[in-house]
Image (cartoon, rainbow, N blue to C red; front, side):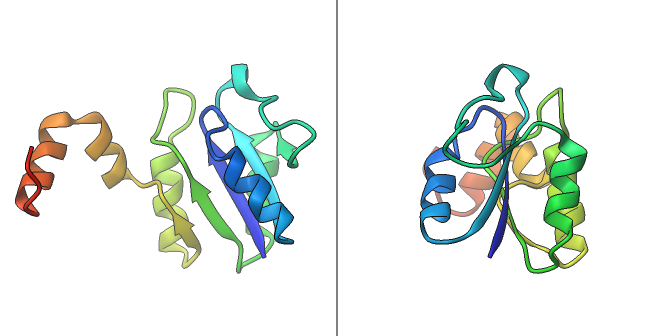
Length: 118
């Protein structure tokens, strides 16, 4: 299975290593230029966003994993939404999740609406 991982600072590295150990074809793109070397020598890292996207989209059965919300550098939520709309397998990410994280009042209201104590 091909797994394309998007991370802001490399937080998904342990998961990427485990997937590789289990035989998955993995590529990780790290948004933060300061963290681009996280995982070097452990998993394949892509430093070019467009190349990473092309790698993942070349397999229609690829799993896309987002361990982050959108940043100033990259609107990962919109990308996750586009991939889902195209029928791709996506874990994490999305504009709704970005809003839950960045708009605390909205996030608390959603949590309260589903019965969580806030």
